[in-house]
Amino acid sequence: MLCRALSSLLECRDVARFQARMQSDAKFAPRSATVAIIEDDAAVCNALAFSLQTDGLSVREYGCAEDLLKDAFAVEIDCLVVDYRLPNMNGLDMLKELRRRGIDAPAILIATEPSPAVRAAVGLMGASIVEKPLLTEELYDLIALELRSRRGPRN
Image (cartoon, rainbow, N blue to C red):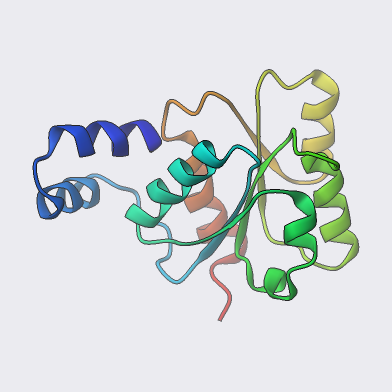
C-alpha cells in the first residue's frame, strides 16, 4: 500500500485524481476503524499513517510502547501495527502487556528479518507478522482482513 500510495502521488498531478486512483482498486477496510501505529522511526510512522489515512482509516501514532501503554484510549483501538524493535520495550513485550490489561485488538508485528523464535512467539500470541521493507500491500491487506473477520470496528 505504501509503495502504491507514494508512486501514485508522484504520478498524479492533483489530489482529486490521486484519491480517485487510490480508491478505484483498494480492498477497503471498515471506514470507522482506528489503527494504532507503534513505530519509533518517525519517517516510517508518518508514511504508514499517510497510507492508511488515504484508505480512509483513522490512525493514532505512537513513538514507543510506553506512549501507547499510558494512553487511556488504547482500549478504543481496532488494530495494532507494531514495530518489533522499539526502544526500552520490544513489540512482543508490549503486546503481552496489552493482553495482560485485557486489550485484545488484532496485532500485526512489522520486523526486519525476524528470527524463528520471534515468528513462533508472534504465532502463539495470535498476531501476524509482516517483514520490512514494506514494499507490497501485504500490511494493508492484513489490516483489512483483521478488521473484517476478527473484530470489526468498535462501536
